[in-house]
Image (cartoon, rainbow, N blue to C red; front, side, top):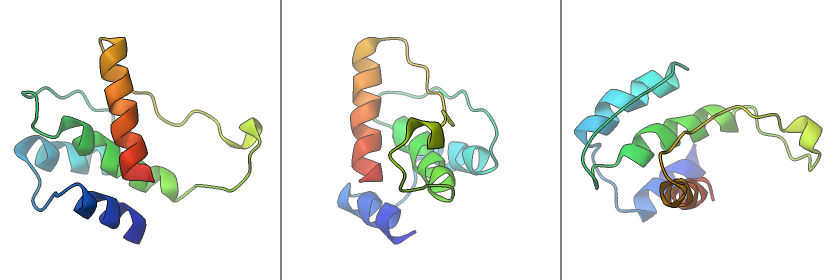
Length: 94
């Protein structure tokens, strides 16, 4: 997936953090994930990158909402964190 790899490189990632090493295989396997780690350890990338990879396989160009059902749910404890996660996912998924 060249576009996703390019987005990762643009963010300066070279090696996965411990949380990413544990989370990425779980998400790629399509399993639910609950993770906890300190701020700045790459938690969002740990679930967002493999999620985007999985979702891109079934992507379509239709603008119809009927062709874009909800396929992932991310729960955050605050609105501010939800906005931060959204911004990160938009960056990775560009």
